[in-house]
Image 1: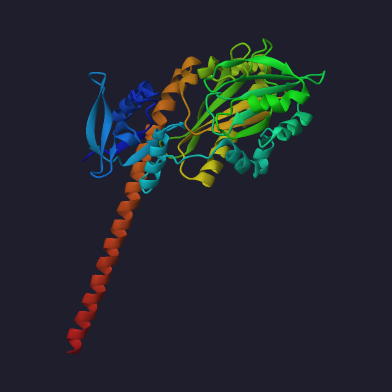
Image 2 (image 1 turned 180 degrees about the horizontal axis):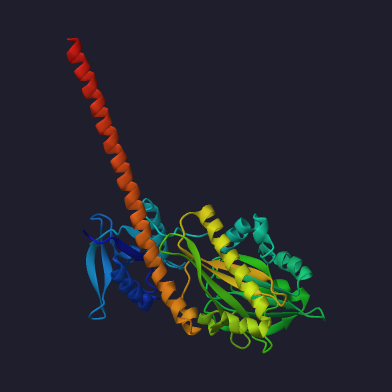
Length: 397
C-alpha cells in the first residue's frame, strides 16, 4: 500500500528561489521516512493547476542532495508560509482559496490585533495580556503612556522584531525613543520632548503596516538586557496539544527586543528564571502555570480560527512571577531550543508536526472508510428490503 504524502507549503524568499528553513525540512523529510509518511516541499509557484501536478522539491537522504520531481497533490498540507510583501504572497492567498477543500494541518492565524481581541474576551486570559490598543493617532500612544512608563509600537503583521518602536517616559517629562527598523537594524536612541512625539511618529517608517500600542513591561535583567521566553505548543502524534518546550531569549546590548534573528541569545528557561526570580519553588510553579496557560490559549485559538498544529507563545515574566503573553506566532522557528542546548526538545519540535500529520491522515481515512462502509451497508439493507418486498409480492401472486 502506498505511503501517505505530506506537502510542506512554503514561499521562496527571492527570485533565486532560496528557502529559509531548508535544513529543518531535511530533518522533517528524514523523520517522515522513519515513521512511514513521504514528505516533499513546494510553493504555490510550483503548482500546475491545469494538470493537478506539483513540481516539488524532494530531498534524497542518501546523497544529501535536493532535486525536483513532478508529483500529485499531497494527502495533507503543512503550511509554513510567513507574510511577505511580494507577489509570491498574493500567489499564496490565491492557492489557499483555490485549494481550501484540501486537508491542511494548520489554517492561517489572524494578526496581532485580532488575536489580542479574541483572547481578551476570555476572563482567564485577560489578566495575562498587556494593555493593547490599535494605533490610529499619537493620542493612542499618549493615552497608554499616561498609565505606563513604557510603551511599544508593533506592526500587527510584523515578525522577527522588525519595525518595533519603544517609548520610555522620563521623570523630567522627556521621551526616549528606541527601536529596530524593518531590516531589523537597531535604530540609535534619541530623546525628545512630549511636544515632539507626533513629528517623531510621523517620521517612523511604518512600512505601510498598521500598528498596535502595547504596555511595556519591566523585563530587563540585572545587566540591562531585555529577556523573554519562547514557548512552543504543538499537537502530538495522538492529536493532543502539548508543550514541547520553553526557552529563554536575551536581547543584545541596547536592543529593545530579544529575537534571535536580531542578534539575541538563547538560554534555558530555568537558568534565566534563577537570575530573575531565584526561588526554585516559585520557578516550578511559574512553569506549571505557563504550560497550562499555553495549552489553553492554543485550544481557544484553534476553536476560533480553525485547524492549528503548533503555536509559539512569546511570554514575559515580571519580578512577581506573573506571566504575560506578548504575542502569538503561528509559524514558529525551532532554533531557540538548539541554541539553548536543549537538543531533545529541538528534535521533538521537528518531529511532532510529521507525527501529527500521519495521525491526521489516518483519522481522515478512517472517517472516510466508515462513511463508505455505512453507505454500503445502507445500500445492502435497502436491497434486502426490496428483495423481501419482491418475495412477498411473488407469494401473493
